[in-house]
Length: 474
Image 1 (cartoon, one colour):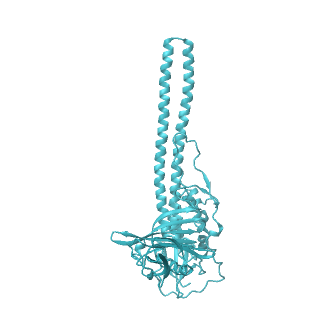
Image 2 (tube, one colour; image 1 turned 180 degrees about the horizontal axis):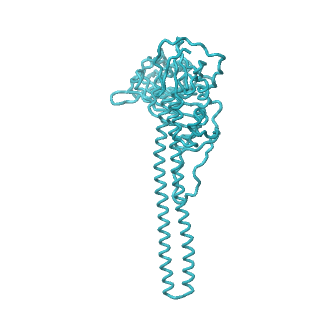
Image 3 (cartoon, helix red, strand yellow; image 1 turned 135 degrees about the vertical axis):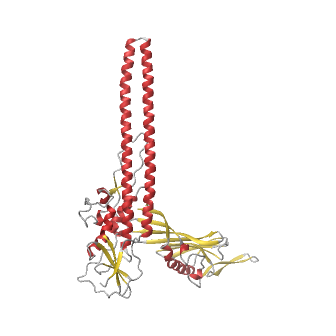
């Protein structure tokens, strides 16, 4: 099976990009809207705090002038009644100023806390929106790392795990997985279920009379997979004869330019180096595990972390920069699909089955444009590279061109208490996305559409929500 553009030329991505785009627009527009609301609230709190501070400053200046005049006049009169009058006036006025100062501090702190709480709520909603998108979407992947561990759940043992992905443009994601949802990883598994005849020189024969220890081969086909961590260049594996046993064999293998290297631990002995024969056997297990866990990678339960250029997105306020990075990643593909779609009101792709049958997937443009409606011109500016506003010029106001190296920052910090003179959050620069991380360049249009095989019936290919599919023969 392969995907085609609407004009039947090959589509460079091996998945339904329209589903990813639909999920992205629903989540990303909400994230941008939440960011604008948080920014407006922070600006309002900042302006209120500054106004109160200006009022306090004016009162203190007035108090200084008045008290200087009262004191000077009392000194000139040099009478006890006048001096007592000046003293009482000073006490009352100083108390009034101090009361106003404390009220200003309390009001600023109270409003800062309210702003912080409101923006924390918005950050939680942003995380939820991003979680929904990343669990449903397909992004280009450079490397994948999966880790599973067998844990006891009552009397039953089950696997829990995580998966980490390196995507183009400096984006990394990590998810908690639910292996028990699959039929193959909902129970403890033995090595023999993946590969057979695995023998490793990791055993020992101890002679108590001679006081010697001799290495021996261990047949591990019937041993259980207790935990493993399988990446592109590193592999860790723990095996036990029974899941409940305490003794285990642990292996660490790494792939280098010079080949495989690694070591093992077990039997209470110091770590030992693995032989080339052992490394070859473990490489078979490594490869089999990566193949056998492909269905587990689809069982994303919860987003654990997102980083942008190794910086945590939520902890460092990079949610909006992440959206901008994704917009630039998708922009070329969206524009090319729009250009090659036969219907000007739709984005369309085709699925070509192995037998030659073709089916059309489509997503209405007005559905995507509608996602932009709650946004201001600045918010729509974030999505300008997708070219959505140009589809229906009368529906939205076309924003100015977007520079890939600048963007509005993510959620601003809450205003501080008294010293609140800093400017409102402004434009935050981020590095441009690496050119190497762009989606594959579209295939140049052919001189004439490729003739398709006549369709016979539809198939069970997933269709994005609110999208439709019709059988097409071209």
